[in-house]
Amino acid sequence: MKSKISLLFLLPFLFLVFNFSFSNQTFATIRYVSKTGSSIPPYTNWATAADSIQKCINISQAGDTIYVANGVYKELIVMISGLALIGAGMDSCIIDTRGIASSYYDGVIVKDSCLFKGFQVIASNQIGNGIKALGQSFVNEKGLITMNKIVDGVGGIWVFDSDITVKENFCLNNYIGIIIDYSNSLVTENHIYSNQKGKGIEIFDLAHLYCPVIQNNFIETNGTGISSVLGPRSLIIINNIITVAEVGWGIIIGNSTDTARVFNNLIMAKNSHSNLGGIGISNQPRFISNNLILGNYESEGTGIAVNGTNLNLVEILNNLIIGGEYGIYSDNNPSGTLPAFYNNIWKTGTKSVGFTLDSTNLSVDPMLVNDDPTQGELDFHLQMFSPLIDAGDPNITDLDGTRSDIGLYGGPFGRRYIYQDLPPKVPVNLSATVDSGFIKLSWNRNTESDTSYYN
Image 1 (cartoon, rainbow, N blue to C red):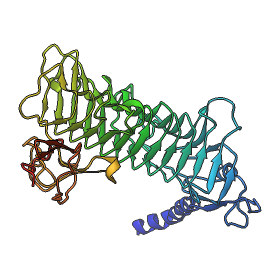
Image 2: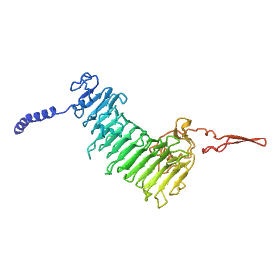
Image 3: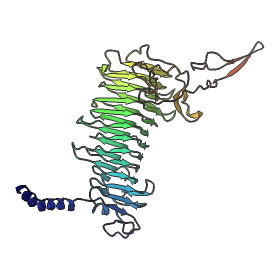
Image 4: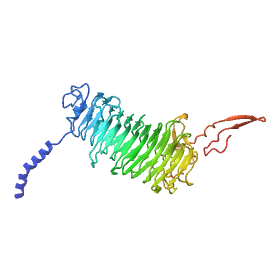
């Protein structure tokens, strides 16, 4: 009987506690912004949509979603944590910050656990950033910045103290396309184009605490593609395509980055005037594998440059370097040795400086499907009978389980594909002379490994 009285006594209190918790739960709300709405709070349909993005944000709370219609919105935006802000599309839904601020500013501030999608953000002639993802130190913030276009900023997208993912954005004519600052962010599938002599992606981390990943991005710049001079504890750079338009480097990794892995990147000069530097690294642990560095056959440039006095921490394996003045350049190297094995260096002025390449390294025609832009679409897959097939480091395997190929598509981060059996290239510099009743033909000898005679 005593237990029954106790239970009856507690029931009203349990009801009160349950009712209080239920009544204080927050429910996500969908709100709208449009230039044609009546701008009546709480902006929960298109007819009453807010005429200002920030006005709608100011009455929102974490978990809300705001849809923004086509139009030009002249304002600076500060989001709240946990908000989804979705524009109608990067070409038609525009946040124009020009003329709003006269000194350094951020056009859109994205807080932790936010989604920012579907906008064009126009900065003001390189005096401000387009988008800044702002987190809190030592807090693992998540979120997504995706499918936006950012134009004319000092930084197109600046991630600071946040682990937000940056994916499928277009960064056009910003001095630095994307800045990753104290962050474990994934930066992937972005398109970065600039005629500024700045950088495509720059990574900072003076605390050496973070491990960002940079993969599958397309970068075209007049400066440096990816730079980590003051870098993180660990850095992965994989499967990016980098084009250097004038004078610059594809990838630079300085002393302050503890460990870096640079795999399967394509770095190439845009035209015959480009002075291309491929990959520049220091003597901390650096693993440089299966990259293709395509310079110009008759211009200056270096495929891979290594600086340091303790180069045993470096591995340079399975890379293909074509063109330029130097293949692999080892500076400040008193030992005269460098762990550079199973690379192919082709049509460079000097294959190695500061050390001697061993016999595992090749200098042969790689037999790419097409590395000449005048002959159609570039294609860097190996042809059947290429001497680079199964010629890489025997401790590294391709995706099909065979020994690694040398070049862009070899190794565990490469691709499976069928080798094409193409005819040899058409002979060049063909000439004919008449001598004692005979016609003498001459031409440049073909370099493909499957060409041993002519008919």
